[in-house]
Amino acid sequence: MSVERGRQMLSAQGLNLFAVLGMDMLPEALLPELEKAGVATGDYSRLIMIGHGGNLMWRHLSEHGLQGDDPVDDYSVRLARRFVAEFLDDCDCHVLYPGKVQVPLQKLGTVAGWHHASPLGLGVNAEYGPWFGYRVVLLVQAEIPVSVDPAGPSPCDSCADKPCVRTCPVDALSPAAMPDVAVCVDHRMSNGSECAYTCLARHACPAGSPHRYGEEQTRYFYGRSLESIRAWLTNT
Image (cartoon, rainbow, N blue to C red; front, side, top):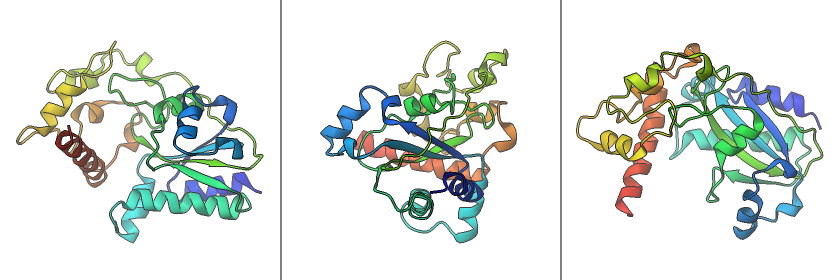
């Protein structure tokens, strides 16, 4: 096995966030939920998280064309499976995310040291700010070292101006509370909303500004979230 070489392969393809958690490090409610969903958690020894920070992943995807119903997930899972096959001796694995099981991504990200809480309701990373994402979470049967990143100080702690809060056009954000999701969703769904395919508050965040998504990447991810909101509203 060569976890480090595998990590370098993933990073070169834009999946530059990586963490390995022991099963005893997982949020308390996660294992029962996985068992309830039919996942034999006792068959695995580690949970691996793979993510992207910045826009390198998007540049790789754009070079090869955005093909299929979900090119980002397809790309990410394909590389994750390659990582297991080539660098973990093709050990037993189970992809939890993307998938049907509800995975508490932000709680896992906190354990992994990937982010701090922010007024945006998104995690904010010490290097990438709010410009990162969770791409794959999988269980593996491999006795590899636990690996988490030191969280470092939160960028929000030294940000006195809070431009994200000031920039939100519907005052859905607060420095001391979670966003008012209902207000945000209602505005995004309104005709001609300037927030339909972007987030003005997120783009106002100074943390990780060199890693901000470009217009195409932003529109893709916010377009996907808009589709999810519409589907949820249709079924409620």
